[in-house]
Amino acid sequence: MNLFRTPFFLPRIYPSLQWRIPTKENELFLTFDDGPVPGPTEFVLDELRKVDAKATFFCIGDNIRKHPSVFEKVINDGHAVGNHTFHHLKGWGTSLEKYVENIELCKLQIANHKTHINNFFRPPYGRITFQQIKTVREKYKIVMWDVLTHDYLKNISRKDVLRGSIRATRPGSIIVFHDSLKAERNLTYVLPKFLEHFSSLGFTFKSLPNV
Ligand SMILES: [Zn+2]
Image (cartoon, rainbow, N blue to C red):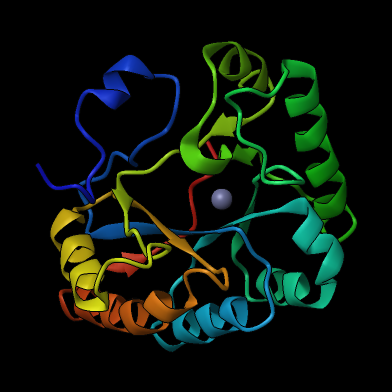
């Protein structure tokens, strides 16, 4: 089993969540969680621009509040933005009411900068209860992932992050990176090489489709 690839049974247990984009084209869907953060987010934007890639940024509302100008850069580069709660809440152990309220707080931050807001939501840590899914999906498309790069881990070599992520990736993969300080060390090594690898194979990188 490849630890970077989502196990096949999870999408069967949670079919209402989005794990991968059905496509026959060589296209990939990069996602960046936990920004905007000065430094890592700007690094990602520069790297994406080099290969003409579009991505989706799942932003923490409180980070948008703290770093509005970095958030503006994400928008101005034409990337999609998704909701990742205001306080990066873990769904398990959080009441439904508090969870939904935190999502709405994040939405308000996004709305300060964007008139058109899409309905992408990613649960922090991937932890969300069935009850929360039922309520949140009335308003949002809940986006999980096909490939987790593990860029935020400290006890893994950067080469292993790169190798594992490349091996797990296939057409239509939704891939998770983090534009956070915690992931910065791995991210700065892995992302340019990952983009170069798949670009040279003829892959394109797109924002998540609005459907
Ligand atoms: Zn997160």
